[in-house]
Every structure is written in structure tokens, then in C-alpha cells.
Image 1 (cartoon, one colour):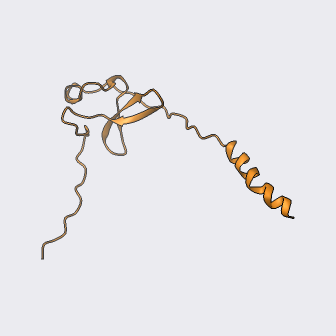
Image 2 (spheres, one colour):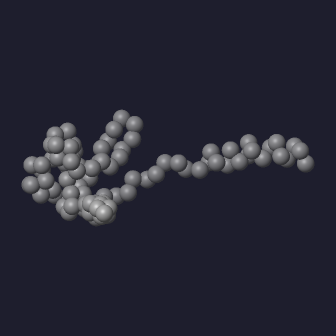
Image 3 (cartoon, one colour):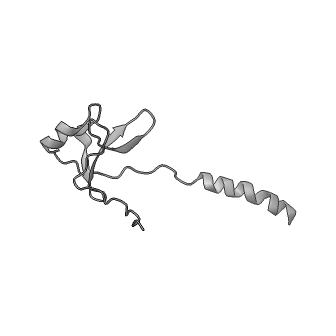
Amino acid sequence: MKPFLFALPPALLLLAACDETTTQARPIAVMPLPESVRELAAPGQDLSTAYLRREDGCFWYRYDGPVETTDLPLRATGGAPICTRRSVPAETPAAS
């Protein structure tokens, strides 16, 4: 019984190593950016991969870094994200 208990943790580690940890990049629908968004965007961002994310109403672009590819929010020259609608501000507590 004891040899089985010692073999169990290494066996579980070996099984966990077989799991695929990489995620497949989801396809994105790249649409032509409006000229107003192009004018707002800060330099250094890949506007050819920019798209509008429906979940938050903001523009995002695909960044191909040296290690991984990730989606980043498209930012204006001042650093603010470029969105089509304002985010809802947090409720402020009522003054008593």
C-alpha cells in the first residue's frame, strides 16, 4: 500500500504535464478604423490590427511581442483608452 502512495504524486505531475497550456488566438474581425480614431491614436500602435471589442466598447489592437502576442487597448496620445461610449462611473456615497 505504501509504494502506491509514493507513486501517486509523481504520476499526477506527469499527467498534468500532458495538458496543453497554450491558448489558441481567437480570430478577430478587423474593420477599417474611422479617421477620427486614427487621428486620436498615439504613435507606436499597430492600427492595421485594431478592432472594436463589443464587451467594453473600446478599440483594441494586436501586439506581437518578442515572447507572446496579446491584445492591448488602443490609447490616445494622452494615454487614455479610445472607447465609443463612456464607462459608467462608480456610485459615490451620498453625503449625510
